[in-house]
Image (cartoon, rainbow, N blue to C red; front, side, top):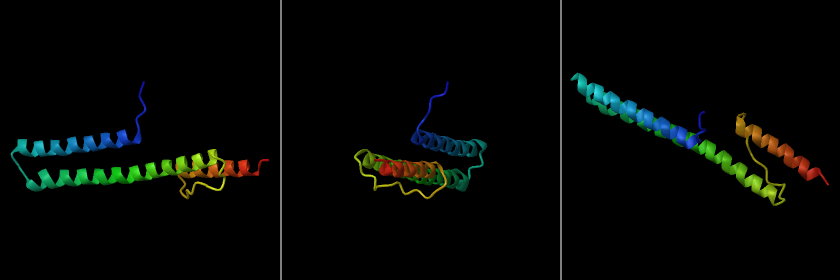
Amino acid sequence: MFRRISIHQFFLIQLVLISVFSFYTVYLNLASGQFSVFLSVTVPTLLFATAIVFYWSARQSVVGGVAQLKRVSKAIATGNFDDRPKFTSDDEFGEIGRSMNRAVKRLALSP
């Protein structure tokens, strides 16, 4: 029923929602006649800037992990068992990295 979306699409949807919320706040301030420059400009700008920083940091984390796994898997495919993923976290990338290290160790030991 639901289509899977990429991490980029997810964060872009978040940016759009925060932007819509921010501009709706500006609209409400203008419509109520209580125009406040601080509320109408500063708060939406801060929300949008925070969303961009969050998007960038999450993207770097995900893309960096995937790039490292891709590099190591290509090295293993060419027969280089010395290259290993270097994940120290306890998240999904850490689990995949530890599993890949165990698999490479077994492949290197097999005749």
